[in-house]
Length: 355
Image 1 (cartoon, one colour):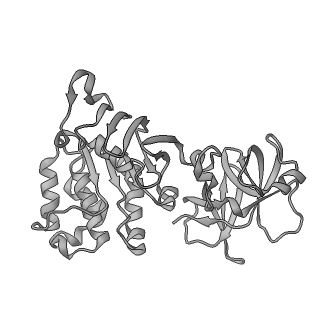
Image 2 (cartoon, rainbow, N blue to C red; image 1 turned 30 degrees about the horizontal axis):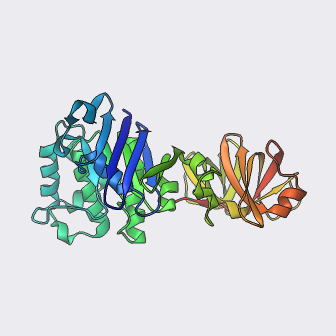
Image 3 (cartoon, helix red, strand yellow; image 1 turned 45 degrees about the horizontal axis):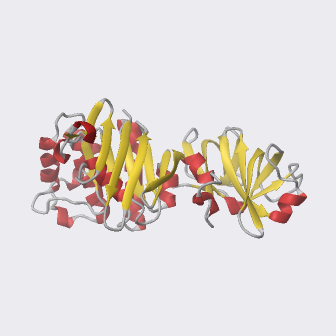
């Protein structure tokens, strides 16, 4: 079920012009600076911006088409909307909030017990919502959204108001949504860490326009986008845990470009994980070093080279099917003859598991 969006909205100091087709499954992150139009776009999709002009198709159903005078009102759109601050009914218990959502559902795709079990809130059902922590409130809000049996979820910075511990507790529930329930999620965030952890796809919004969209691995490493040029530019490797070295306390991961070692993690063999590699931690050599303290050396092909500033260049690398970034000096690029098409080796000084 793809989601086709074409919207134009003019406000006093802002205009939104967006035309895009969202993926039918998985988590798509809407990312970009404040005021870029991320929340406004969610509101357009939810039907909460009546002055927005355009077209919205969800699967085979048209929810809005101005040329044919079609506009499905917000309460009839099969959407679960989760706000930054959980909006719960304070006069009802957790159970009462969930039962209200269940009555609103046009059809029941997820049962009450399934939503409660999925979000781990069975022990909270009799509590008043004002007695819940921030993380608990967001889990209740998530369960309530699921009980409306939505065709997809809109999540507007659901972790922004939470402390680090609460974020860590809620993240796995969001991560499992599209895997367990096969539901598409449009996820607004300002946190590149959340994007790296959760998203499969990214839409970069700035000044009400789409700067780019695609798979997260391609977006983070595109030399044409600002993400690769930031001080914290990072690439993502999806890998499988293959073994633990108990002698040296290391964990070995395998991906299509080779193997990676990192300090031992509590991960089961066979688990698929994501690893962050910062561009500043990658150097290039012609041949693998025979003696070096750097354990991770990956064969790569130079794809692109772009000037970053007066002293540095950015290099986009390909390790079989995985993109990586390296930030090196102009002098190093000249001495090593770093040009597209050259086969080299990437020395990765540091890697970290995304958790």
